[in-house]
Amino acid sequence: MADILQGRLIERWFGYLTDQKIRRGVHRSVQALEADIRDWIEQWNENPRPFAWAKTAEEILNSLAEYLSKISGGAH
Image (cartoon, rainbow, N blue to C red; front, side, top):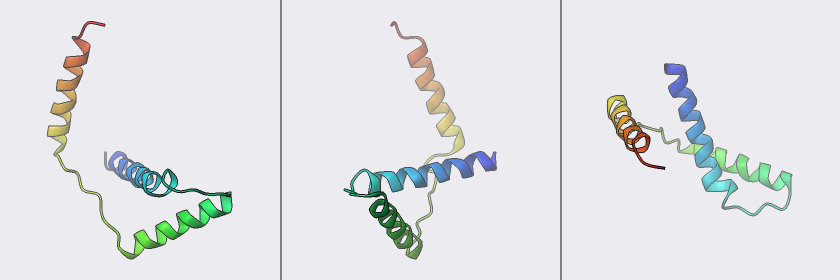
């Protein structure tokens, strides 16, 4: 389970990188994109911010179960 959670955090970090740098940036070359990413990582490492779960696993699973019951019972 710990490996799964670690993987999720890594995915979230890359998602944050994508949202903050890749989608918002204008890169005229692969080298410019790479330099921008390296700069962002360097800045991140100077002031790292850990990701923290906002809800307990039980709250997340209950929310998911509620959502699934809504969509599985709906008419399509």
